[in-house]
Structure formats: C-alpha cells, structure tokens
Length: 271
Image (cartoon, rainbow, N blue to C red; front, side):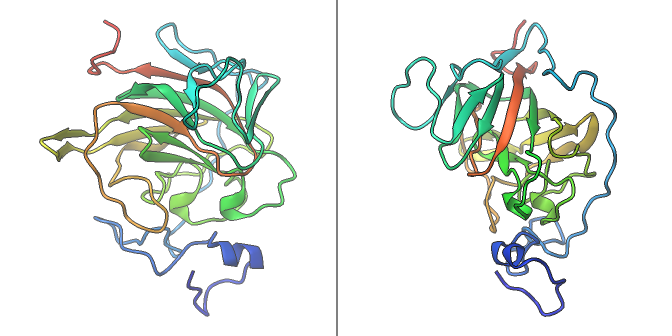
C-alpha cells in the first residue's frame, strides 16, 4: 500500500490494512476513479425507515426458494467432501435461528445454480466491535460466484467507497449509506440480471439493482467485470447459471432470512 504524505492520519491498523483505499491501483474502465481509490467521494448517509418486525426475519413469497430458514444448511455446500445432515462448516455456527461467521473458515455456496434472480438477505454486525475498515464484519453476497455485493459494517466506519457496505465490490460505491447501527438487522434486496455470452464473447453484461433497508443503493447498475481486490478483473465466459456464494472473511457477521426468486426469462422460472 502507498500512503502519500498529505493523506489524513488514521489508526496504524487502518493504515497497514489499506482500509481507507489506495493510489497505486488501475483505473476502472469507463470511470475517472481507480480501484479502491482513496480519494473517491463517499456517498451521503441517510437514515432508513423503521423495521416492521426487527425480532424476526421477513417471510418469503410463496414462489421463493428459502435458502436459510434458521434451521440448517441443507441447501448449501462447502469444500469437496460429502456433508452429513446437520453439518456446519468450520468458522460458522447456527444459533437461535441465525447463521453466524465465528472465525476463519470456508465460504458457503448454494447446491442449486441461479441466473436472473430476486434475492433477499438479512445481516447484522456485532456491537462493541473494535475492528476497523475492511475487518468490520466483512462478508459478501457473491452472485454466480463472480459478482459481489459487499457486506460490511460501514455504519460509522471509514473504508474505500467501492468496498463499503452494498458496494459492487471494487467497482461502484452505493448511492447512499443506509445502514443501521451494529446489533440491528440490515436488509438487502437484490435484483440481479446475469450476463450473457455467445461463442465465447459477452453480448450483455450483468446488472444489479440493490435496496438497503428499503433505500435504493444501485439502480440497474452494470457490473464492469468480476469481483477482485486491488485489480480490475474483466468478464470471462461462463454458463447461464452458477451457485450463489456467501463469503467467510474470517470476522463475525450474522445472517438470517435468505431467500431467492427466479425471474421471468430464466428457463427455470415458474410459469
């Protein structure tokens, strides 16, 4: 990491971890900003509306696939071994209907593949968290295992804008920061359009519309490539569907109420 002399002084931990950003990364295609640009403006903070039922997860619609209902990980896999019923990977636990990252371990991937979807995820950061920047409840909702919507406690913690909560990681900050404080539940509602390829060439990029606690953070925003740290990673051809991934980034964060709906146009969408 390169720190210029005129950068603001921050805690030593934040400086060494690159939490405020970088100046030695490549320029993002079609933008005036570099990947994780330390000088990129932060979005304004807004206070979201009240949560109608904060004590419990929102219920999915009748045509949704419930990916985590508070009981088990039967719709998920990790690593390469066959999993027994009730198994939970290293670095995770299920407690009181909540799925929690407790420490270093494997990321989760759905057994089922998905393309164009509506996705609902609820997550919460712990209170009394002394970590900074990219180590405050870092996780990610990685669509098709390639295109990430960032999960991070950015309520009152600075980091590079394209790596804050609800960012299309490494590409686009959210339009606003609409997070709730640690200990409260945040709600992501994501409408994702998968990219399309023909004869090894992309004919349509991926798009995402993201609402955070009912507030629009991205409106039909184009993914300019795949998820990557400190670099720009262009598209690579892949199939029309792939697993959804929830990242284990070694630090505590909780999840509940994860469900998905296939969208019209997907060949597996309900008729």
